[in-house]
Image (cartoon, rainbow, N blue to C red; front, side, top):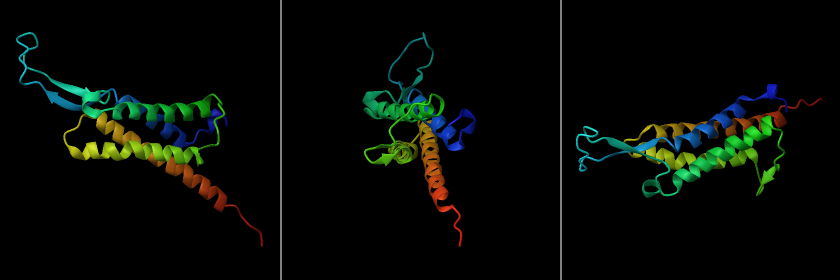
Length: 155
């Protein structure tokens, strides 16, 4: 496939995976340290943010999200731009199905975090990126289904 033949879903998968990986480094929650007096050095006690990599707050979830985003963005970019030949299926699932499942694995917990309370930019971007990954994988699955059903027949 040539680089000029890039589908919108390919761009969505690469961007969604990259944003999902980047979102783990941003603030996910705000933790106030009002009980700690930092003196006049910093003025008022700042509210510090916690990223997805904070294992005491989120366990290994942020690390898993980073890996999901990196695998999706890296795999699609490697196939599209470097011509890397990846297996057609992994454990019986094709690439579109894997992207959909990985997107859902990221989306469902992030949706819970999103609804759960005051969130910072990392949760919001991760939530949107997971939704974009799901939408792109559904677009690819529908394109394959439409291509097979759209073949004309002669009578």
